[in-house]
Image 1 (cartoon, rainbow, N blue to C red):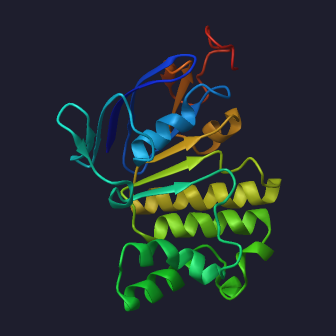
Image 2: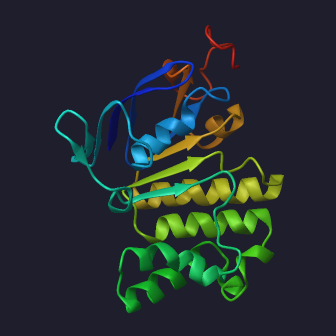
Image 3: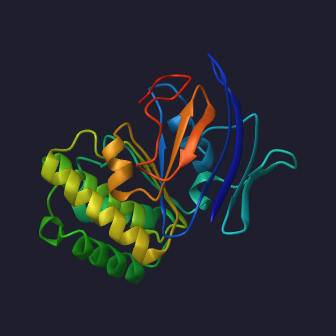
Length: 232
């Protein structure tokens, strides 16, 4: 279970948000551009310093500004997938998936085993020796997802992962995401602009406007428009 209370003063408003994500469930975070969605993820990931925050994951405190607790980003065991897959184009698919494991000093045997396993699960074993720069957008996103999950994360966060993909790739990446979140029983936060994403794979939808929670509930029951930013 992820529980986060976040405060961060931004240029146009102050982000002041509480969010929860349950194991094996996908929490969809929606809002217009600049509403604070990516800021929320970056604070949880430890990539952005909050003004005030308490972040706990499976009972472990990752951040509590009140007493100075701040677990480094690399030690938070969070898998993070961005809109534009952050693959290393000069490296092979195998080395891209293995990158996070090496950075966390897994044993050579573990790296080989986990990397091969996730290549197989993502149906990209045949691409292991291909340089990532030569892949299609959908293939790159599967590599990024495999790298995020190979470290056995306690939380998966996806920031607009479907935006640059064609229809077939979107369906594939959605199916894989849903499958592994359920199988691994990890909480997942999915940032998206598309209502269909929440309705197809989301368990709960949170709409934020100007850094505040505007609406939270079951996908498909969202009001016609939000009263603040009219993002629907």
